[in-house]
Image (cartoon, rainbow, N blue to C red):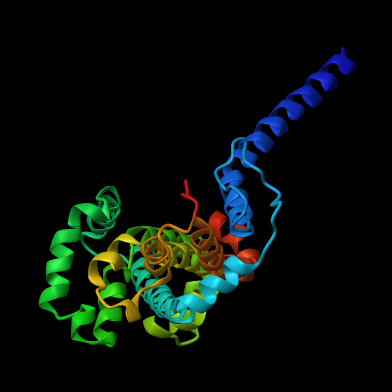
Length: 286
């Protein structure tokens, strides 16, 4: 009977792992196919069926071609400015909003918190037109200069309800005794926030930075609407522009897409050690 019990456990684990491996392969296959396409020469059919994963006509020419024929460095710098500014503002504003919602008592706190959470249900596409009109009225588009254009790209995403929620949950996880001890030592509210509590939520800040960076780096819709000057294009808009420049040369488009994902991978690997602990800190407390 014991043998049958352990055999059943092993069989269940085998089935579970098989399903997870299969789903993982399905998820990663488009990325593998993208890498394969970017390494195929002009003499190989990239739309062959069944698809060939290992290139028969292996070449790096697609990468060198994209790098030399478009302003890839300029697109990269623009994306870094936008993503870096968005991450910086999100970390500051989300932490400053989450702190009073977690540690302070004031009238209407719960109403304010649930009102912020309710905005998650509103897609950006629903408010994109009024946001664009506000941006236009404030002269925050690239027609009024590069600095104003970057501000117009950053400000609509400078803070998010998810970030506020994550930081609130992180601050709630800090023992009340830490706050009381800091107050006894003479810390005021600002010193308590900056010198005591903020360093204790670094994992959650790292998680918020990862999600914000990925979202901002891959944002296509808003930059494609706001930007009209090619010199200010971010990487997603610039890579999409390859379709017109090279008459849908999918090898170049694939190479450009792969190059644009490298900063995301580097940023994630740099923050990886904080990721798991930070996700746990942001879990809903009972």
